[in-house]
Length: 178
Image 1 (cartoon, rainbow, N blue to C red):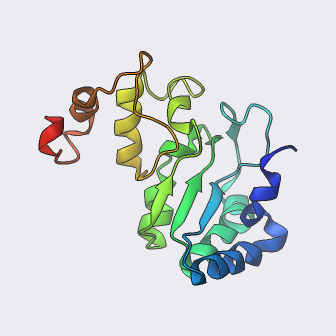
Image 2 (image 1 turned 120 degrees about the horizontal axis):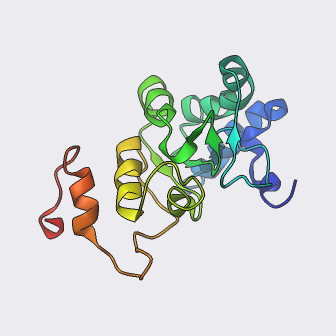
C-alpha cells in the first residue's frame, strides 16, 4: 500500500482509539481535525473506481467503529469521504453519510470529498451521474458540504444554472443562482 496509509490511522481497526485521541488533541489546540477516509478505503489500486464490498457486521465492527469514536467522543469537526464505492455505491454519494453520520451519530460538522472525488462521480464511477451539474446536486443531497474539487465543467466554466436545476427540488437557491 502506498501514499495515504500514513494518513489514515483512524481506519485501522487495531488502533480504534488513536483517531479519537488525535482528533481531541488537534481540536484542543484550535485546529479542525479531519478524520478520513469514510469508509472501506483499504486499497490504493483502482480505488477511484473500485467497490469495497464488506458485510454489515464487518463494516460496523472494523471499519466504522474508529469513525464513531472520533465523532461521538472526540467531537471531530470534519469527515473526509473515501474515493471508493462501498457495496457498489460511491462513498461520496452513499446514504450512510446521512443515515449513520448525521442521523444516527448526530454529526453536524463538515463532510468533505477527497481531491477529485467529485469529478470521479462522472469519470471514475461513471454509472452515478452524467456531468458536473448532476454530480454537484447528488453530493449536496447526500450531505457533502466541502469539496476538494471544483464546480467547473470540462471547458473550465462555472454554470450555476445547471447545478441549480438539479438541486431546486431539495433546496432554496440564493438569488445569484436563479
